[in-house]
Amino acid sequence: MPIRFTRNTLAAFALAGLAATASAQGTGKLKVGLMLPFSGTYSALGVAIENGFKLYVDEQGGKLGGREIEYFKVDDESDPAKATDNVNKLIKRDNVDVIIGTVHSGVAMAMAKAAKESGTILIVPNAGADAVTGPMCAPNIFRSSFSNWQPAYAMGVVAAKEGKKTAITLTWKYAAGDESTAGFKEGFEKGGGKVVKQLTLPFPNVEFQALLTEIAAAKPDAVYSFMAGGGAVKLVKDYAAAGLNKSIPLYGPGFLTDGTLDAQGDAAAGMLTTLHYADGLNTPKDNAFRTAYAKTFKLQPDVYAVQGYDAAQMLGVGLAATKGDAGKKAEFAAAVEKAKIDSPRGAFTVGKSHNPVQDIYLRKVEGKENKMVSVAIKGLADPGRGCRM
Ligand code: PHB
Image: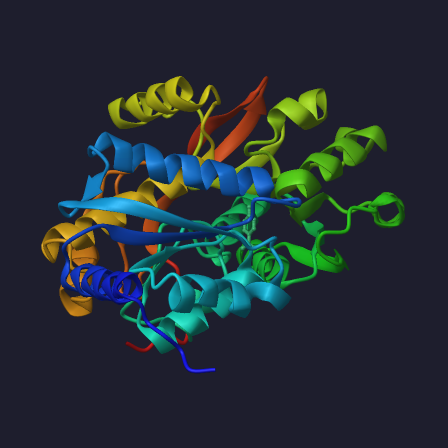
């Protein structure tokens, strides 16, 4: 059957064409695609990132680089198998100017590949996959969070300084768990410790009992775990219920206790973790952020909210330099590379591989807070292994 265009459909096409041109040239609304987990074990993390991002945009009157923001959302379910299809909904169907996502390292790697191919600006507001700012690095790919190596390496250094000699690692078996374990091992063994066993379970499995029995029998000086969201809640509770927290400290990057303390309760008391954010920083920037976040969302912010907020700040810096044109990639990147991002975590810069160069705090759980104890490592830069730009 021949396709018939009415006057109305032709007008609609003309308008759509105008909108696409306007978008590409830096006028009209800027299309921002949020690809985050809104279901599953990481769903609370996705919500906090979206909240943080929108808080910053709203503080700028709803505009970045002079352009109003229009949001497009995809729930990625933290499922790497669906990641390429999901990110193409934003790139090809919605024709977004910028993508913000995601939490899960496996999903983020598929997003980075698609962003590299299409040239779309991608800002990763959590996933630590070392490769994103390593071998997959690109002028249009940025991260507002951390590399898996950063907090893990710092925890290894701290564990060795605490005098621990042996450790068992317990993580989900995917990029984030593997890289976090490697980072911890590097820092710990440099300080004279030894990782004696590496235990894993598939993501997002939370059947820890057999592994905890194995740890109890092996009696290491410490356990190191990468877990987050719902999995972190369950591990910390199971670890305490087995009585292990009395004799073998459970260490981790701060994801183990961030955004989770209400659910973990006393089971998390006294835990030491390392992260690029902490409670009790008590700086004017962080205090203002926390007050605004709590007022807007009736929730306490966590590291994920900070990373979302800072993804919006980085986007704002790039767009200010290009007068709202997301197509001017070189100018956008140059502006972000020389910026100092005024983050609630403390100001940071973005290194050559586009990953934050930032202080890593040592934190201790007191009540419902991850209280800052000290700066474990100042201005820690990811080595950016394999990045050539
Ligand atoms: C990751 O997959 O890189 C990841 C997920 C959750 C976190 C941190 C890292 O809290």
